[in-house]
Image 1 (cartoon, one colour):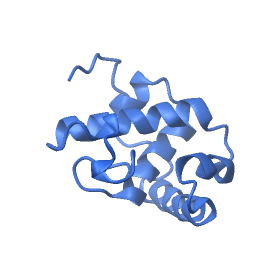
Image 2 (cartoon, helix red, strand yellow):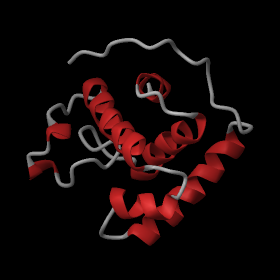
Image 3 (cartoon, helix red, strand yellow):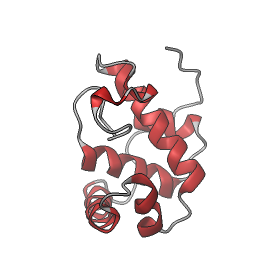
Length: 121
């Protein structure tokens, strides 16, 4: 699912790894899988589904869009955007998760790269 969203958003390999690391780091329940939008009662459009699959894709798409627009290889600077309350702690933690993910997967993104496909909700 993460690879599909990454392909749809034209994320490069580095950004795809970041998207996966954010998911592992945030590890939120349905509606907060990627930590997008703050508390569930915030009214953020990323919380419009809380059913698992739709919720995961919506959260992943918001995260991928943020990565696409604001990530330039500097995780500390990106951390200020993604988690403005605790940017240094967040970027350190995501960096550690990123290293572990790459090691766990032999520095190769898992699975085959899927073709782009339209996701409708």
